[in-house]
Length: 220
Image (tube, rainbow, N blue to C red; front, side):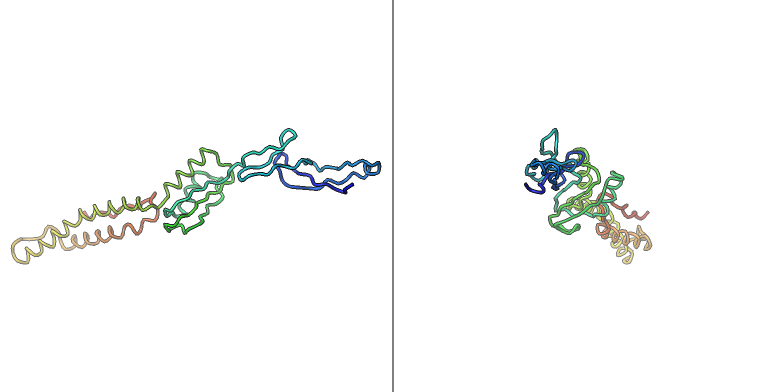
């Protein structure tokens, strides 16, 4: 008779946790009986092989395969993203539940394919999965969103261009005594030039497309 046999243990919820040893009972061995002392929450029935995403659970005297509750959400994208901004939004929407956000496969601000994994301390159900995916999508720093911002910037520049060009033309007319004065003072003209430069620089200061800064103020 063997001194011990391998048994298979589970926790109070029946979830398989690993192997242990059941010791041969000395009293039974003396009388020729092969009886082993099983530890609490164990069985001599081996659990089945568990495919990815499944776990073995001891239920009503038998093993069953059950889905492992997810505690994370994964999204793969090629869009840029600022992790600190996404993390802040997740903390606000899931207070006390978020563990951490990790990005793998590519730099967060690059256009390389990357996987964003949001890890929680709680189980992710269908509703939470959908909410997290929506938050991630909203924080993707995509080229399409920047095209919209640059388009609005270009429209504002076009509105300012005609005032600046008019002033330049009027200065030429005044110099040739063909016009009494310009519509803009030199001070206002410089303010419009500065405003145009701020518009040109604006896309570079947008670091979070979900929270676009206020546009430069047009000169009065």
